Length: 423
Ligand SMILES: Cc1cc2nc3c(=O)[nH]c(=O)nc-3n(C[C@H](O)[C@H](O)[C@H](O)COP(=O)(O)OP(=O)(O)OC[C@H]3O[C@@H](n4cnc5c(N)ncnc54)[C@H](O)[C@@H]3O)c2cc1C
Image (cartoon, rainbow, N blue to C red; front, side, top):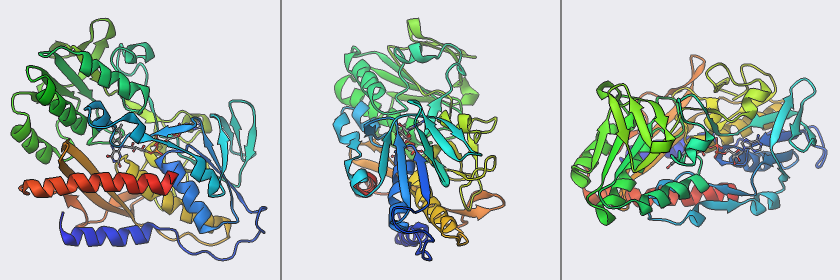
């Protein structure tokens, strides 16, 4: 990555960080109430940034799970390079930062009464609501792929048990077996994720089961960081990893879990291990709150992250339709800080500033081989649009030392973002 690009991203971080506020109207403890649903990269970051923006705000974070299991680097768990424990974080430090934790699942939102209802019936009143529920699988959108099928053909697209299931299946597979990954059409969580996963599974197979083969069946003809991935595959995994695009019969139209078979218009692939990354939508509370449109995702005002469908509710992270911004943890964190600044200013009676946001997605192609794509975004034409000339991808012909340095940067990024949210 060039020095110029890094400098630009640094200035983007400053622009996205929380601004100083005019004095709020109410005293400490009786400040405006912000409820955030979802304690992942978006919701957790937003809660922390709100407390920093104005300690008098009463911030409540609703989270279903006592432990958060992070997806970034979960492909390294599947590839046998990392323990799942390194992905897991608790909320003690979040609570210590003065954020009220509501452990439970938000099941309904009453936007006119401004309250969130939890599955146990508890009601949380709010002045502003931030929804950050991540994704849900669109069960049934791919014929044959339901929750029972996921126990045979894991998606591993929400980290945890599914990650371990896929890892164990690959470990148990005899040498010479066929692993198939089905990659979905856009939009979906983590655009480079299926290809990083293919790389790290190929690395495992090359090292441990070299007679095996990996096929990626893709519902697209192009994908994130494609030239970099394909060059690395040709160098590191020739003959082992095959990518089949949409135009060559890559789109999976149905699955049969009983025989781990993936069906395309061009034929059937019976796999020893099948990883089906299915079509997705915003986490289901978005639909219950009325903020998801027919696409299943949530249209937002690009300057304020406020829902275009329901006033007083902001949507950030994977659940939002964020224009050119990809669905990544980095983007979720960036959006969270910008949204926190907006919400704090609105609650203080001030006009929100226009945000500038950044994203960098690192991928590992092998343990010591990292590549990245970066972008800078701003509201334009009703969407979050690319800032022309900013961002870019890792250079095509970089020496291996540069790839190794990017792998180190990737790990450093993960440590930094998880410390920011959970530390
Ligand atoms: C294999 C893989 C690799 C990835 N690698 C990277 C990477 O290298 N870099 C990167 O930037 N991104 C990466 N990502 C993408 C990243 O994980 C997501 O973009 C990010 O997690 C989105 O953050 P979020 O807060 O929107 O959702 P999440 O992080 O999923 O958080 C949502 C939270 O909301 C909670 N929740 C949902 N509904 C409710 C409810 N009704 N009540 C209470 N709680 C609720 C959930 O329990 C969860 O904790 C990867 C993803 C995958 C699958």
